[in-house]
Image 1: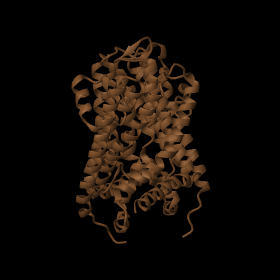
Image 2: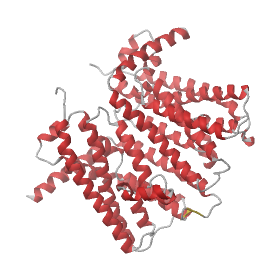
Image 3: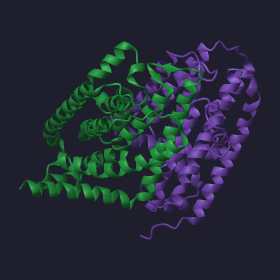
Image 4: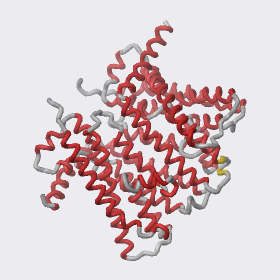
Amino acid sequence: MSVIRIKKYSSIANRSLQNILAYRISYVIGFLANFLNLLAIYFLWHGIYSGRESLGGYTWDQMKTYLLVTFLANAVLSWYSETSISGKILDGSVAADLLKPIDFQTARFAETLGSSLLEGTLSAVLIGVFLLFTSGVSVPHSPLVYGLFAVSLLAAMLVKFGVVYLAALLCFWSTGSLGIVWTRIALTNLLSGALVPLAFFPGWLEKLALWLPFQSIIHTPTMIFLQQAESWEALKLIGIQCFWGVALWIAGKFMWNWAVRQVTIHGG
Amino acid sequence: MSLSRMFYLYKKMYSQQLKAILEYNKDFYILMFSAALTQVLGFIFLWVIYDRIPDINGWKFWEVTFMYAMIFLTEGIASLFFEGTWRMSRLVNQGELDRYLLRPVPVVLQIFCTGIGINGLGNVLIGGVIVWQSLVHSNLEWSLTKIAIILLLLITAVIIRVSINLAGNSAAFWIRNARNAFPLMVHNLADLAKYPITLFPQAIRIFISTALPYAFISYYPATYIFGKSEWSGWWMLAPVAAIGSAAAAYGIFRLGLLRYESTGN
């Protein structure tokens, strides 16, 4: 039984990967756009650090690493998976999903994993190119750190999926997704540390951010990769990530059960 | 066709769109709010940075916020009044452009009025407030000429912005794909002009001053307003950039239109 279940969802993941490959030119352009954004941010920080040793406890070399890790963590779950969930709700094709013997949430997660595979590989390649042209990026040496980092990146994905899924379900009540998506992106960027490391925030804002789930998405992976959290501390952080991942998953289940009762689908 | 006639037609078509958009008002507020929020969070980013350092490359907090807000302000105006450029890929892919070609009204004008991006209102409001605050906090010496020049620079900035949008979205004639991300990439390059262009390598500086003259929306006006002596006089190129980009955008659009071949149903 469980083998069949895994097969079911892995074929969904595969389909989502194929879907991206079919629209590859647009996908690559979209990806390049993100990369240009990274360049802009890189040079901005370069200017900020000119003539300064360290800021907010980060040296320029550490900040470079921070930016690259942020790019990677952001890229593995991007715009693409976001719009496909809300799109289903808005155009009513969710009605067909209700009839299928699969769990909506798991199926969407499988889809996300499928596209993340490609997104992760692509961004790893781009980061490699980037590293060729920059020097001084501090990279950890111990394999343990890489292992922990990989685990925390996976956990970060689960948390981000949770946030994205909850935001997408809000589309049951609205007629468009763009506003919700933008709000979600803006809040996540600020509170996860994607815009600026949380250590730069004024005390109260940093505390608030650390209490919210968003910090698991960027802040935790970067802490581990920059070795600002030693092994036990790192495990604790991953534990917090897992907590948020599971909590958001359950919240998503509840919200889904409540939201499907709101469905109004016109014609067909 | 005379200018006043075009303006009249624009007003007519625009008010029809306005009626349509007011039907979905829940979305309306969410969009406006989200656009404003995005901008405010970027502002917080700058504020957090400047809390720790006095200047970036000689640029002070309120000078950078001016550049930052100009990008959003012009984007807001463009999406409020010229949002239609963003619907071009749909118009081309679904053959809806046929209708426009049959009417005795300039096609570009009809495209401009194909939609209203109500999120622009949020951008215009917050962008306007930040620009205003930037001017207030910078101890400027005001004169009538200065006000006139600032207004001129604002107008050229909007023209440049809309022209780039039109040119970027004309890619729809070449890339026939409903998920064409090329215009978005062109649009995102404006991010480079949110900050002083001196931060960037020479190649990028030249690129955003010539090929995609985003720097004339934010940076060059800022050098004039805040009296950066090493760049004095550069703002005078802004009208040239505006006329050049408008002409180029229209040229690209006409060229694309020649390639247009409906959908066949």
